[in-house]
Image (cartoon, rainbow, N blue to C red; front, top):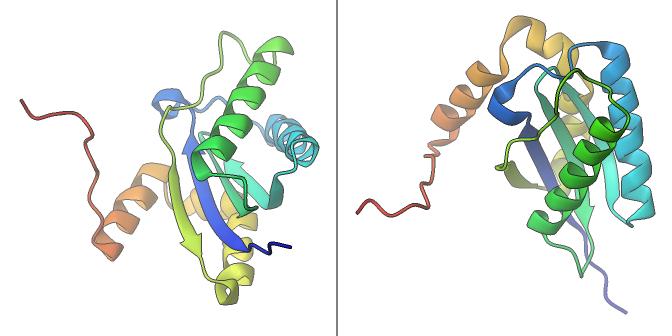
Amino acid sequence: MSWVRVWIHLVFSTKNREPYLNSKELREKVFNHIKENAKEKNIWLEDLNGYKEHIHCLISLNKEQSISKIAQLIKGESSFWINKNKLIKGKFFWQDDYWAVSVSESHIESVKNYISEQEEHHRIKSFSEEVDEFMKKYGWNYINNESDN
């Protein structure tokens, strides 16, 4: 029997970082729906939270799952559900891209704490500022998959 425990911190934003998720009530509805949907699709979603224009997920992949497939399942179904239920004015979209990093088993609790404090955290720092800070702190560069020619 295979045993796999690969933790992923997955973050994705709304299209053009529009603050579609602009109320706590709306976020709670969407987050609860995502949790239920993940359970139905056998996605081990340990934690989930976010703010007006993005969501953080802590996920443990099983042996048959990939980050891209999990992101597609969560994002695709939730945007469909938000639009079907007319939870916002106009059409809701997630950004095509996402951010994902592996998490050591020893850091699970600190990542869960970070995810649970999103609303408080973003009263001080915007999502854009946070992304830029992470990029500088860890020496990461944006990867452009398009040819320069």
